[in-house]
Length: 247
Image (tube, rainbow, N blue to C red):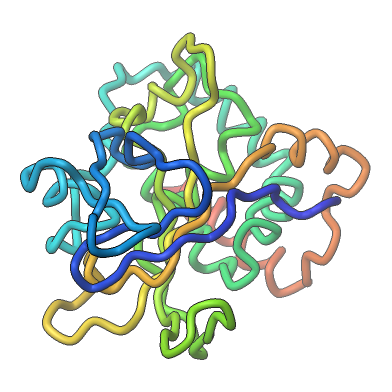
């Protein structure tokens, strides 16, 4: 399977300015708010309005911006069908998750699955399988890396935290499957170590990357399902499923 096609990783500096290459982006790709050029800093833009900058994942001073909601009516029939289909093909989903985020563990995935169960994700009748991996990554919250990563293209910066976000068009989980002309943006945002908050904020963003072609990656996994799943990972998943069924 080929790697995720990605927009070039860009950085955010301490003053909340967003770096870009090539043509000036008129709107922020994550929050869609208008951007304005920074006259003193060629190649940088900032949010045109302070209120929007305060709400954007890339520049907020809050470590927990508005998270995904799940405004769905519980539907036992849809939930049983959707969750059962996921469990039957879980190794394929796990392979895609690991492809997008090699550091994610089976424990982190089952924690995200437990959260998905509480939210009622499986009750969405329109749920599509190729969106489950990115959704579980988005529900996983901030993930601390076991080792620092020093991006060679950003001297003096090191990455210690990671989080995945959808763009602002996805407020409710059901927005993932609403009729639309374009797929929602899905982003990997990497952060440095926070000093004043328990989790990173926009002030610690080191770089962000927009990931593309996830449906194609899911389709490519058709003949590779179950690759690289260890006996320990399989046991952990089966234990989670049994405990969640018996609860």
